[in-house]
Amino acid sequence: MKSPNDELFEDGNSSSNVDISKTRRKKNSTELQKMGEDLLSLNKKQLDQIDVSEPLLGALREYQRIPPRHEARRRQLQYIGKLMRATDHELIRAALEKLRTPDRQQVRRSQEIERWGERLSVGDTDDIEAFVEAFPLAERQELRQLLRRFQQLTEKTAEGDAAIEISEPAKAARRRIFDYVKSCMQ
Image 1 (spheres, one colour):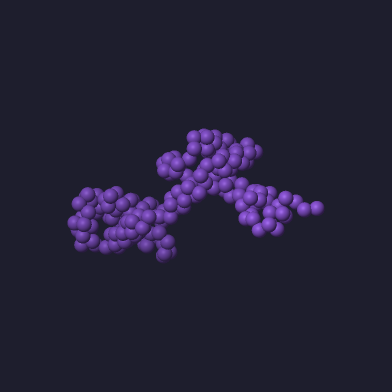
Image 2 (spheres, helix red, strand yellow; image 1 turned 45 degrees about the vertical axis):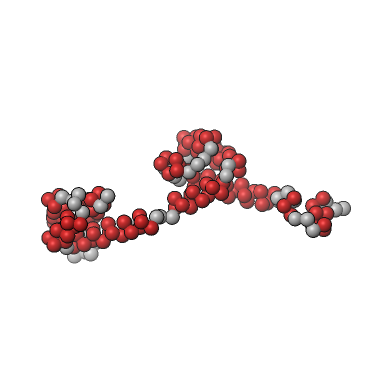
């Protein structure tokens, strides 16, 4: 006995008239749930950049309210997947991809911050002068204080321990230098 689907294939008509198999529907549903999980990993600012429907936004907020390790989270995630089927999920996928890939300008800025931070932490007064000249928002005195604190902590580490690793206070001081460089470069 032939099914109606067999006749469609025999007639040569396109398979777009044929229902999608249950396996494929399940796979699509799982993919949409996964995309919903990706949406859950975004913060509020990032989520506002993506055009999602109000019911989906409410379901995402509700999921975050449910305590971890609770069966309701799984059901809520399935509900999010169901709502995703009703939305333009390709648009959401493109927006997620755009958020995941860093902008070239941001990458260059991060690299420049890294270069200046390294140069200042191992450099001398000429490097400080060059930084202050390149970035007028930088304050020479504050920068010198940060560098002096970092150098003191690294000297203590080198004297007290022959290990190559930097101590936690020295790492924190180094991080403050990089944060200061970042704030000056805005």
